Image 1: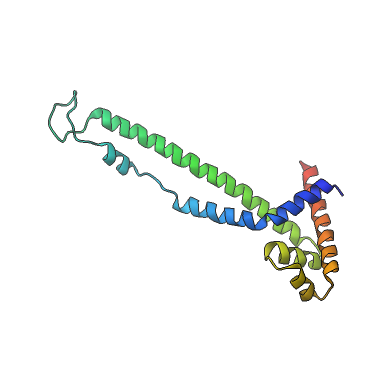
Image 2: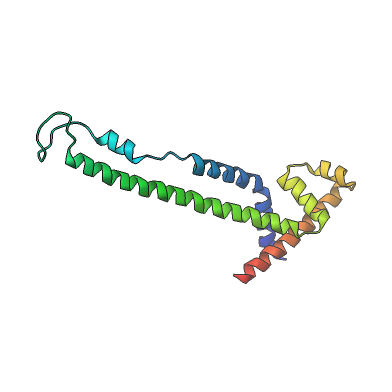
Length: 162
């Protein structure tokens, strides 16, 4: 089996919790991102002053100011949409990686899947896993190594499809 693929799988497993935090953060940003409403932009830019086209009375809004405000709002809408799109793309990529990893782990034999889930996803120590399944610590590491090899085979098969 390709050692590079095993290293890649090990890195995916080790960074699983970090990706989960990033996913949670991106979900929050998607739901709570600051957005500028059209009214806020226009209200902020609609300063009362005379304009050359419509008289010189106080409190009158300049046509230029309104034009600038509308252009600014279009630009802010575009920027908000671009930012949301970037977040959505990153979120989709991370969730896809996590889903694939969880699915591939589910394809392992039960004992291998339990060891991988316990350590990499749930954060249980190797000693606790060994005690839980009633085997020596060395056996747990053998199970883990076998599981990583099987995961690497799955990822290699997927890579061969591309």
